[in-house]
Length: 328
Image 1: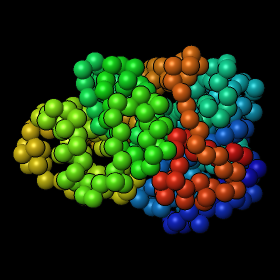
Image 2: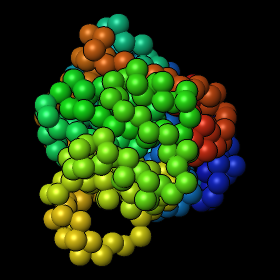
Image 3: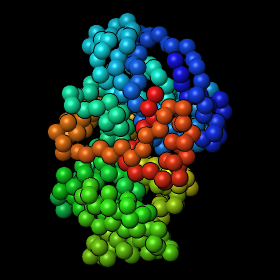
């Protein structure tokens, strides 16, 4: 089989396609022939060394395919079953992937392998952000950065379905159109702002009768954190769920006092799907919405497995919209 391997931390160029032995599924595991692997920002954090991992490394924690073999103790899955997965363990940039059977998510009929691979991490992240980190409902207004990204498009749809008003930021008119199509009430072109930290909060407050938003969802991080904090209303919430522009430096907590007794949280999906029942519920809600057609998944770019470096370059350069996939 073939797998993408990085032997040391670094830029996208450290990843190369190599021939490796086919693994045998151990107890509680299944071997899946991958049809598509999801590419996520956390993969770039692992590859670059932002998050400490062991090398050599095969990145990737998400994908979909067909079960080839099962290990001891696996009774609910068998060869031929279609599954997707979201795992905190890397290794999905490969032809065949070992997946913990408990983390394998059944793929409903009518959902393609590519769509199934695009859903687990970003779909359950979006679900976690609207049902878990907070609970959105009618009358609430939110600010969402990167509104045309994979999480952004899904989160916008889920938030609007719950009655929330969504304001987004994007960098191009093409992305603005995608964000509006997903349901955004207002789209702000941050590339047209001279001073994001000053101008964005002013625009947000103009759009919220001077109050600010109930929740700011920030997956960009360093470049947007100050503007996000200044856009939140009194006793509101800032959800920092990523760092696409870099990690946020330590914050003086007195800033939260001065800004209006604000709340800040830094969630990670795996703390919201560690419980088997909760994981199954979140996956079922997302997959069912996709199967019913009430949640649209945009696959913005497909790369061959051999060009994982190109996928990372595009993702980090904000040259993509929706989901990025690697195809074995």
